[in-house]
Length: 301
Ligand code: NAP
Image (cartoon, rainbow, N blue to C red; front, side):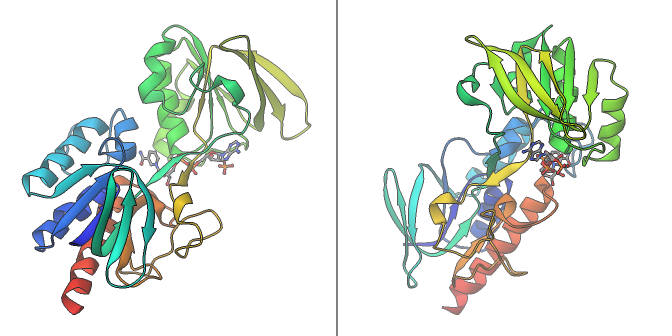
């Protein structure tokens, strides 16, 4: 029986691991694939304190993991399939067995949203990660969809490899940070298509074109491209908990100021929470607070 089990090994979960172990809790961290979460999909991070030069997401993720391991946190690689939240002895069912714990910190993060028109082209020209796949499109023409920080950052990365990037956004103003907007607007390889939504992706075996519809007059146009990168936000990885814990209509888990969910002894942290600003440093902060709350709960019960 563990004091705390942390589900998810992104920045929120890893920080929770560091704090929980230092609070003296018998801690298990369960991660599905590779620790780091969405940090692993980020080429350069320029706004994480303590690094006066850009750091790659993969490097930062590994530094956090090494800190967790050096403190003696137990880390298992397994998929959590279900959780029984009843009573003090909560049970977590994984593909490799069952674990018991007094408290849980949910930190499963989020996954990229889909446009709904990708069809058979996922992995055949449609991608959700510029950092991972941009080098495959060296000298080619690609489309990027979205107007947030991710779309702007990743378009700049894509432009380092592709010969041309069509950036497609459904409104006439970007949502992303001003500094990124300036970089995009000043990049000669990036052509911006405001007030357009993609309605069809086409090709034989691989993506060859994308059809855009104007949100102003419904006219359509077709762009010849070799790849489509979709950056339209993320959905929380909470599907397996629907109906078991309080969440909003979009599946984001609701917590109080101490990261406590509606279930005693169950806390949540990071991108699975319903909050406006999503940043690595904020996920870390959530994780630290959730670990403190888990420690307080263990002492009290
Ligand atoms: P986001 O901020 O939610 O932006 C999603 C973008 O996709 C918006 O521009 C949205 O348009 C558009 N969109 C959504 N659904 C669409 C659809 N069905 N069709 C076409 N367009 C659609 O997501 P994000 O850019 O992935 O960022 C997520 C969070 O991470 C944010 O809090 C962001 O600040 C943070 N982040 C920070 C950094 C950084 O600090 N360097 C880097 C990456 C991400 P509308 O604008 O019209 O809604």
